[in-house]
Amino acid sequence: MTVLLTGETGTGKELLAQAIHNASSRADRPFVSVNVAAIPETLVEAEFFGAAPGAYTGAERKGRDGKFKSADGGTLFLDEIGDMPLQLQVKLLRVLQEREIEPLGSDKPVKVDVRIIAATNVDLEKRVKEGSFRADLYYRLNVLSIALPPLRQCIADLEEISARLLNDVVISGAYPNARITPSGLSALSHYGLARQWPGIAQYPGTRADPIRFRPADRRRFCPYPPRWPHRQGTGTGEALGRGRALRRGGTGVRKADPRTRA
Image 1 (cartoon, rainbow, N blue to C red):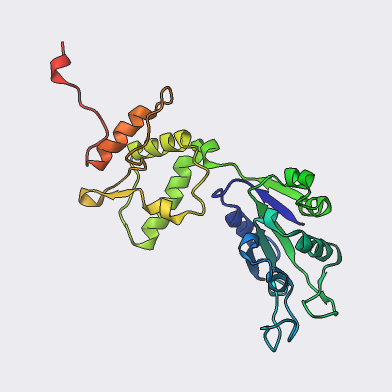
Image 2 (spheres, rainbow, N blue to C red; image 1 turned 90 degrees about the vertical axis):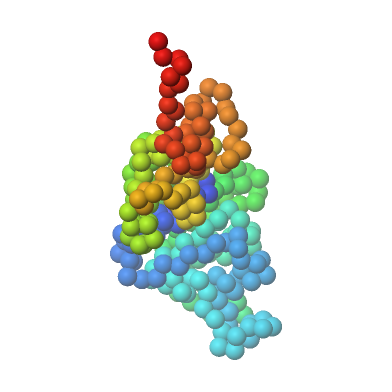
């Protein structure tokens, strides 16, 4: 069954694709990931379908296997499918229908058994209406559609997500005693809501960059940029002050002024 994953950048589409592959009967076969937008248009056909010996100037003498052949028996993950050129969309549609490919420079079709998982962060229905994406290919890909929500819509899951990521940091050995304090988790929640954070699934740097060293091997998360503007009515002003206090080495809790006591 072909799967179409939709969602903003950073929501973990490739991670989910890998999980789907690992849980399938194809788990012991290859999982091949391709970023469609990263392949030069002049090489895209050979990259996907392979090339016969001497198919073009500079081609390998022995020919080459394309991504479909490399993924034979397994799963081919097509990321950013919305950026696929129209001429390649026609060939991909044929692969989905006939289960065969035709390498560049060859007139002999080659049978392949590949499961396609496609992903996009654009509105494919809109692109179909605009004429930049084929309607028949869209319906072929959209057999099972899974929409991945951004992190700002999953703030209730932030504690579990943070615990998993922090566990990865501890296992790596870089920070064996690392932990997140309640105030740090609260700061991340405010940050996710106020900054409209799309996600952290594919940004390893965001897991480590906010960490600040503390005495006794304690770590506190301080995700606020120095010039982050205050927003009225969102509760971010208090969080911003806490973030600044944490960067200075404080607790983020404001002490009462003794002059105001009764």
